[in-house]
Image 1: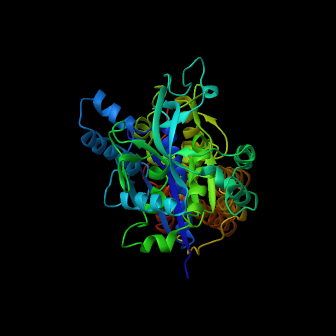
Image 2: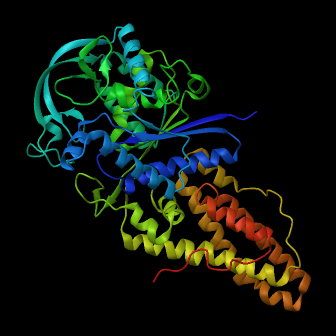
Length: 476
């Protein structure tokens, strides 16, 4: 009987097209989802757009387009990029969807009310539109938000608050006992330190006259649900929570893995678990918290304008090359810097001179010296590879592929089967056969990372023929 496996990406702000950091989160989730499908798990991969945000309104106004038309265009661009990256998502959720998402957000709100954890209070604070959040003076540099380059607004208003402080110790206990696993350990320690200091109650609504988009608070149209009880709920509203048909929710919740960037750790490891505890719902099992892809040492940000457009790289190198680079050269646990030059160098080393060259050499020997295709059983995958996936160390799994390629190259150099077959036919053919089997294993390991390349290598082996053109042409 297959197991269920539910994995999610963050939902992205559609105020501009996605950059390499967003592509990384989504590709990472897709690689894990594809691996779990190979294990015959019943997998559900969710991604989407966080649309109930003033960022979108501002961006649409700047483009002189109605917000909904602007949203539709940007979301289509998201989906086009995901298609180029071979993202096999099962659902793309949009938080502006009144039929799919809104019932779940309002049902969650009602559960928090029923638990006695929502109350109305007056509030004064600094609000950063870029963050879509209230921030403190100590987070500013010379009065400016360092991430978004603008001064926050001084706001005084009456909002509904969620009693987050009530759940500090409960959430901390869940994390300490591993009931909510946070990977890597550095991020676990970071959130535990925050919880040790104690959580403060957080604003969960904004006055309707101050925000132009959003979900009305049940029973109080003068307020709209603020981002946490809106955006975070997408993980369960997508599955039918709050709707009549909640079959998927019953089947897949709790999530096996939430993939998030380190900048939204507090929301996912403190606010979201507290909301779920208040609502008497199970917590997700794991958070994989990746670092930033930096550009020139700074976080890649649409606001700062230092983004690298993944579509440009895809058009030159192909979507699968981008996928493999992100897996092989970007750490799932720490920040990683990225330049177009480093990408080209990695492409040539890993793919053109690596996987592509190896496949051509082995398949050429097989075509020349083996009379017919060899029968290959689904041979064993290295244990280190499966362990890497089990621990969500996707970079290590990709490294194992590169190490296997290098080992096979060395074996060809050491045994020179293309010469051996001329002096000792049987022994030479035996070595070539073993190399073909090992290449098939490489093809299988490539499946989560480069599904089309994996398929092509296995088809070439079954047809006992070499590729008619290089799998990965070298780039000058």
